[in-house]
Length: 201
Length: 333
Image 1 (cartoon, rainbow over the protein chains, first blue to last red):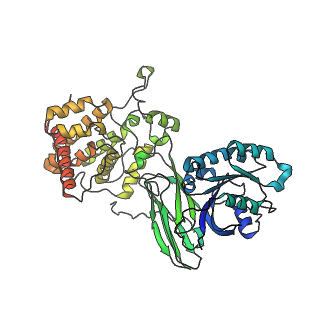
Image 2: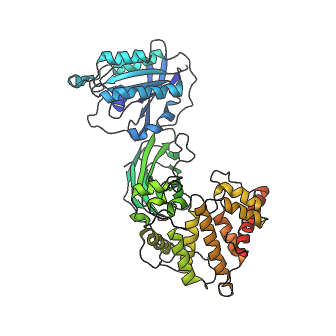
Image 3: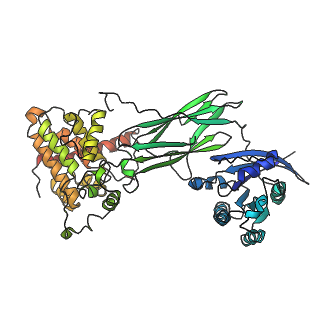
């Protein structure tokens, strides 16, 4: 009973909805309050496809520009790259070219790339048409879908489509340890100590 | 929460903050700060993290100390144009997520760590020098391209070195154990402020703090008194005074001036050896290491092997021999 495991990573500018897509897919819920992802997090989900069962490890990444230089190391062992933009934000759409470039640089053609236009629920603020998204996906030879994490539109389909595109056999990754929740808090600054008359050595 | 700000970091002054990591899960968690892509270390040289890795049992927490210190080992790496401290740490939980922790701050410019080229062009105290001007004079080659026919002048030696030397000469020439006793930390900070702001007129602190400040100042020069590119040649020539002089004659004028000036000062101190008990071998050994430094990218030889140790000792002897020539001979050309 062999289960193939795949790493799927989400990339894209901050606030496009990477975390929300994962939350919708995993828990079928949506959180209205925005909280930036400051780091990298992952969750695992078993998917039962028609002909087989696979385990997807979903990696959520920080979209903030200042962390941009850290992201390529997380692309390295991804089988799937989901590059997300916000259909109401033209810049986030333009930036997807850079993200796709980064993925191609690290993985070449040995990767499935899905371009995702998220936030279709905000249709009155739309800046990027479906056709523009489709055209870009075609130009860059990647898959394409529009979604709404908020409304729950097309999210399952997104993950089903990439899962269906995955090769039948792939080397299994080493088993990852259990997840642990960790909370970080910053206690106030402490003053540097100055030993009066102390030696500086 | 994931951001640490260190405001107004000064040379040789520690600042610290605490990051508390709590394990609110059910199983022990191991954390570690990991290297960023292609980087040699998990943090910048001015930052120290303790512990950088540990295991936290469920329900307990770990206090991680982030300590910022710009000292002689890294001050030269902060270039004058960008006195900004900026780093992102990757806190990795084994088998789990990574947190990005941003550490930033501003560094108060100091003459400690400035290039000799910039120092001889800097007339006022560094803290009164506009950033644009600092950027300009720190530009390699800025000295060569300077047109003195348009006015302005250059210092023969940096005013900071002159002030330190003058102070030692006036208040310490007869003192024993010059350059051998350590100074006091708080006095060194006061001397730094005095050199960087220009006040007070008289350098504060004991003579031993001032001598340590002079050594520190010279050690912080990004390119030492005798430029690194002639380091190995200098060692090769160390057996022959004529050849040593030849090396010195070929180094840039501002390096040559400073070398000549410091040697003359040390010879003057030796004239007072009946009181200060200094001898050539002590000074040559101390200043050999200060004047002559290998190029920055030289592989650090392991001192744990006998061969490595022997090689290091040989280099040390050659540095001492090199400087000895200039302390035992009047050198004015």
